[in-house]
Image (cartoon, rainbow, N blue to C red; front, side):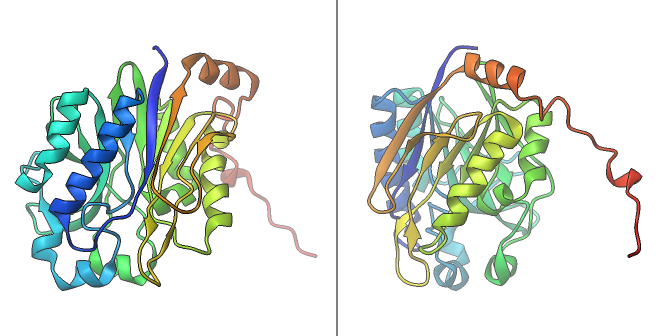
Length: 279
């Protein structure tokens, strides 16, 4: 493994405009790649925008279709394909995906360095009644392997569950990529969860988040890369677009995992040994 440069993007998407948002995402991906990023992470549902009314009103135009192998051929994503291939960078971006069996999922797409688009991961923990009305939860985890690094995939609320990131770490992940959508007023939780997932699992976390939007879907930025001790290596402001770029160091993962043994010493038998006391 060599050091890997990554970017977490905070940007504003236009509700319902998949083609325009794909072009906007491609511009940010090029900016990040020109600063050295090999992996670029954009926010949750960035392609249609995280806007439940728009997602509810027009599934036909806000969804992208995946085939039986998980590949996405939608021509509206051509700017992302071009950016990934031109800059030799993998791009992770949130989308609403229609599966061949009719399921609609809140997914993380991965555009690989050849420009192929895969619906790589379906969000497993849906947040709130609106997401549960719009989407079907995923049933399995996924990792992205690139340049010797294994990077677990999560989407927003997944990162609120310690077990989700832990499953990725147990599967060999050195990092955890989280396209997210945190609204104004949630910064205290935003800044705890992903730092905690990094420290819990002694791995890097890359957190992308939107900005802008209309109330109640007004987002608070704060995109960040956290190191394996949970410290922000780089962080965006709460407002305005930004590419937050940082380099992941394999030596730091090794050092921290040697010093802090939570991952290696995690016990799975504690509940079985629980006793109940009466007072």
